[in-house]
Length: 432
Image 1 (spheres, rainbow, N blue to C red):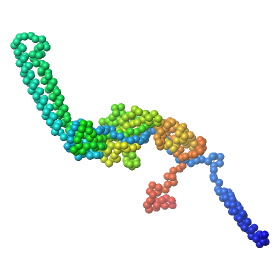
Image 2: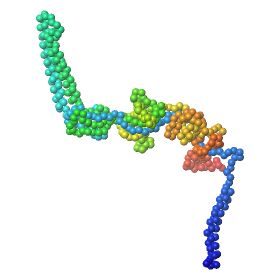
Image 3: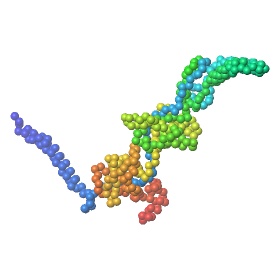
Image 4: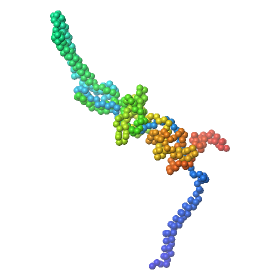
């Protein structure tokens, strides 16, 4: 049973428990209402809808040469596996014949023991000399037989006369002479092959021999990669081929070193940096087309890829199997406007500010689409005011105001951020 003194205490606790939160809530509602009522109204022009402030860009028409940006892998234009044509012992190797080394066209790479082949040359020369001597002897016999036939006064048939004049014997010796000459040429050729030379300027990719190695017929020696030119194989969408120029003769450059086909800028931003680049030329279009994604393969020729010539000193090196970015110059587009993709609405129109400063949706025709911009060939005229400010939920006809440049409010010190004393004094005099 509750005592009389506990009843008032419970009433006070209950009052604080439920009354205090309600009091705080009521005070918050009152403060919010008072703040909203005291906010000054937004000024508006009577009878006119509010306008939006936007940034604009003047449209300029002219010639443009966009670039098709693709990527591809570097491959060798020429590579060979140099092999031995003879059997023999490697007696000498060039100091340049090291893995990764560079060799010049015509330089001797290694020598095979030439002694056996030198003896073969002497033997062939001796055989040829013997057959020539036999021919002289047989020719003398023929002259003697011819004189005897003339003195005899007899007349023989052609076949009998050929036998009398020893024509079969002479023909056989002539054949022996021809065979001996061929044997001599072969022996000399094998002797020359004991000295193996580089067929072109190249870098050594693999090395399979050493001094003292015994070579057999068709033994591998080195793999050579031509260093004068590399190819970059890239894939281009089939519909963009119409804007690329391909040389008809398969040559990348003319006599002056200018690209016959489209020019290409080759980059590798991750390894070379953003500014470094090499130049190339489109050399050919491969016949195969990827039917699934409609991509065509192009070959881009890069001269002096390893930057070995003085003209390319300090340029980044293009290595085999590197994955590079290629920017292919297209054929020129005339009377077009370059518009950023972010200003293109739904891929088919742009926002313009009309002559009466209202919003207009202008349909445009796209001649070329790049990753960051498009080229418009129809729908825009010189001097059109393109709106560059995002307008979510905008509708045609709303009023617009061009955002004023901050340059109009610049002080005389805008160009010089640290004015000198004389400038300050002059400004004070003008203000006074």
